[in-house]
Length: 306
Image 1 (tube, helix red, strand yellow):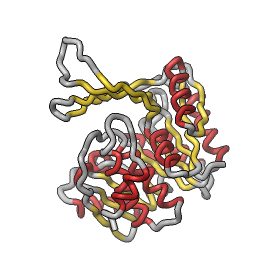
Image 2: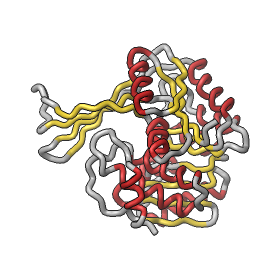
Image 3: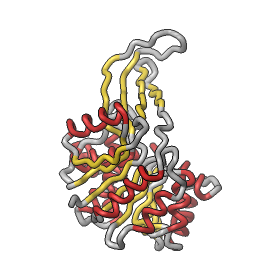
Image 4: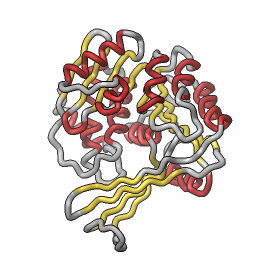
């Protein structure tokens, strides 16, 4: 059994390309088209596999696009387990506009799934009983808000659950508690708390309070180019981001999660795993389109987070 299992209930085929300019109405000629298997948990698994971590990606998939997702995962050499669904897997599109350096991202809502389909994914996770379970991404239509909370409640105590989601699904899981690591962005964290925060210290105090009541052992709040914060029940620490050239923000949060999990799998303490996560998140923005972080960039940037 792999040390890490990832779960993606709403995966996507991430397509990316470049255009000189993006205009309405007229045909926009694109270049450099590429397709990657995507969705939060799949992205985390792809990064962990690059670092040699034993990992399997579990996901819902269906239709002709589901078959394409299977093919892309097989081409990447990633161990996988697909839970079949009747509806089609979604496809997203990212267009990089060369003239401005801006990126346009189009993300469909995804398929409608039945109770038996999403429960099938949960049953696979329970049967696998991995050391680490990384659940990342949005819920598909048809899956209730408490899906991740139910999974957390039913997992064996020996499995450490890492969660990266947002909205009602995040709120329900936080209320259920027992998570090992949860990673919202600042916007997602503010929506969870029902208030905005002016400083990293304010974010840290709110995250500490959640950790102290048993929501999660560690809460990492990412803040984009401004850095990230890690909190537990005893304190919090903020780190600014390393200065890097941003080519695409796609997959930065997933790379951050993979970096932290990699650190924990290596036996690193939370601060060092946090630094590894920040290095991975920074490394991800160096890659264009739907690519993710690469080990050589992570190791180089890790020196910026002593």
